[in-house]
Figure 1 (tube, rainbow, N blue to C red):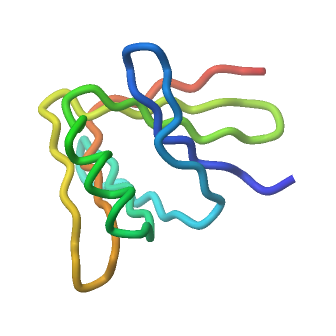
Figure 2 (cartoon, rainbow, N blue to C red):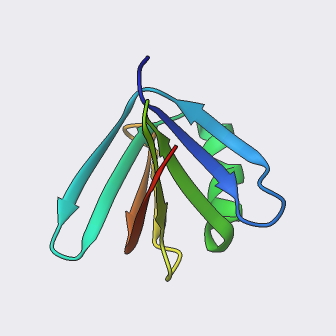
Length: 93
């Protein structure tokens, strides 16, 4: 089973995007999460950037990431959404 990244609306848990192609890089006290995504879907995510939860679902655990200050950008050149998360919680499943 490959790990999935789910981008969800924090109110109602609406699924905005799901992929197994993503990158997470720790940097100081944050995690930089980058996802290749079509521009139309990225626009919808950026519109709700203050209300996003990101989950990485693995075989035995789920990791929740959140950006308290809504630090979410879309790089049009790379068709990539970048989330600077400052919160991470790991849950066993």
